[in-house]
Image (tube, rainbow, N blue to C red; front, side, top):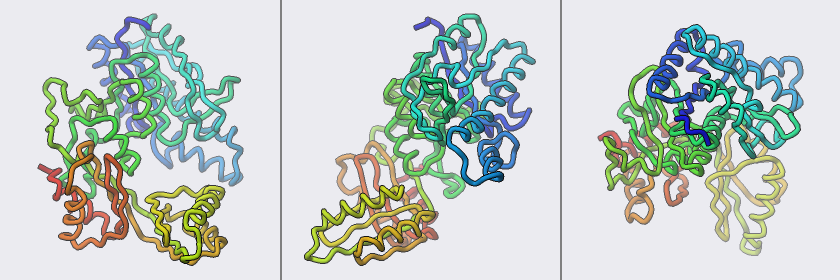
Length: 410
């Protein structure tokens, strides 16, 4: 591997949507150059739905013509947004006297499987990127995409540019991967719902991955998992602020100038709205395990993903996205079991590496919700989170109650 000091910087679509924002991105890139780094810049498609090059705009464009789009052709179309961003940012850098070269995901050496629309990276061959850096040029890579071993263009699914940045960071042995967004970093919970939310200066990979899986939208969990395997630190920063943001690394607590309290039990909260709950009832003369297997197999065949699953001798309980309610209802009718389903739920979860093995955490969760008069319909837990199912209208109240109960605003 090259002895060049490499820094990967990823800029999201909202950070590149206007000429003014692209100037801010260039300022961040210049800062890295001035600190002695050779930046590798990963970009998303510019803007959000309605703006011409945004991914959702391109999806709508294709479906206006025909609702069913071949996945291969859809990936060809969706790859264009990031290519435009890469070419435009190279021109912006050139206007500032910085030599740069744009790369597609395939040119950058990102090789994927053939799962169009949600491809997984199988290897990264960054030789062209290293050659570019050795020629004293900045590399600007179109995120969210790669190519198969036989040259077909693929996209990596939602959050794919984060995944690109993490994968390149590992392949290039970068010192850090910086993810620039429109927030200052990872907060203890959504500040739009809980005004007392605080910036988390340091987190472990596991904590941020759990929060991402449980609904926090700052970074994609697949990107965190890749960085964790490669031991490459991640930093979530704002395009608008000079704040250092959130540093994600298992070694974060030992970094100078950053204090992580050893007794921090809960790191943050996450939430997922718009859920439905189903309860299936098994008669005493029915093998519950066998019925559970049949139910889960049928739901899987129908492409329905389940969450908060609980199986007991007399009952099977789980949640699905509300958008899948009717499909789930139809599948369950075919089982012959008595069941009930209801919409209007949300999942609220506490997350923290310090939860494991600590008595009384669930008692505090229940206490916080009880004091706030929030009914609790179901819970699940792991070593690093406790998730609670509440009514959707109680979601914000539940978040605020648990934020206060665990002192996250202190």
